[in-house]
Length: 547
Image 1 (tube, rainbow, N blue to C red):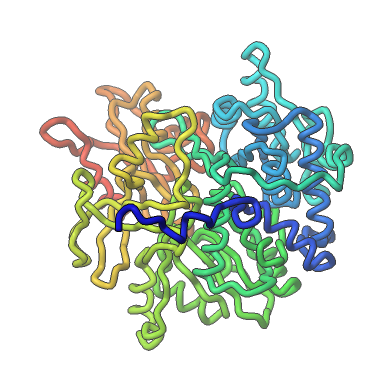
Image 2 (spheres, rainbow, N blue to C red):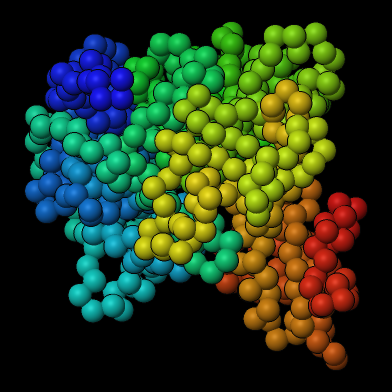
């Protein structure tokens, strides 16, 4: 019967009536149409309805289009979690452009590299960051013919700063049409955003997201967190981190309320919990510590159940218990920039509620299982891609595949090919696979240090250390830290006859790196090496634990 016609394919076609590209841009017009007067954004004394957010986002798309910005162009954003940053997640791609949200903690050299590599034509920047942006723009201006339209955000809650652009954000919006046509992309594979990795070797890599992946991971957040309609979401997680783990689109899909936060402080978080009824927030473990260690005068009572999603280091049992006592339920996730943020979740099972808090913490320490939007997750041999036994002991590399994996690295085909070798995305993270299918990370093969939720490359710090005239050898590892989770610890072997002090080395690094990347501890002495001269970092990690 091989020649027979398949009745399910012969006269059932795909067209505009039954097939449209998936895009998170579709969430905003629906929220505005169904809940036009519902509160969408809170920022200090300001509040915007969903109708207003839609209008402002359309103005942004229109204003960019009038300036010649369109498909294939990059619009960079240097801003904290404020309304313009949220609006850019809709208005920029609605103009057909690609949003490049920049890490506000980076130094001028890194920012300049990203603006050049991503070929940004527009930079929307908050006045708070004018010193570093001014320096980055001066570096960019050295290239002939390289011009960027700079738009300043003059946030009334900010602390001011020099105006660098030809116009301010609100004036720029005023040039746009509030009825600008909201057209979804024809192809869901079209690029939506550009984000940069921390740069484990050499320059950081530009990770490119597409509309389909952002749409699916935004929906995945709803599924794994059990989010109902109209959540009140507090922006403690930076939107420059994997586009805020796709939550700009998730919360909009549910017509919830975005509560903006310029700076993450315990008092501001407690105020938001008490005054705005915040139900959900995300962040690194340091945010939990901040809440639990806040002085009594900064605390506020709140009556609602609150959900907290955290990545990086799993919460210790004592922290987990304290969060539960405070009325905050913790969900542990794992992901990477290359997979739109969290793509693995420690899905909680009801029977675990009967465990004592130590056992619950042990279960929650595991990274878990795949998001519904991530089709493939395995722990396997790094070379053969043969899955390891699910015995909770055999070490392997974590591999992922599916629609929430990046398009690839911008202008870096060799790195993209290497990352996708064998039909799987190679995370570079090492883990074991438990009998129940949950994975548990054991190490990071790329030597990334996760400090306060920020990824720090040990290699980048080592490169800076080697520039010091007294340094003969250097190795940087993670040192456990109660507040930050991990901080960089430098082990240094000095040149014969040379001398240096700890504070001198730290200052040297701070002058050459973003301050949060500088080592917090420096240890002098011979470096342990293999017979071939390779530094034995596992020995240094053990030493760092005891410091």
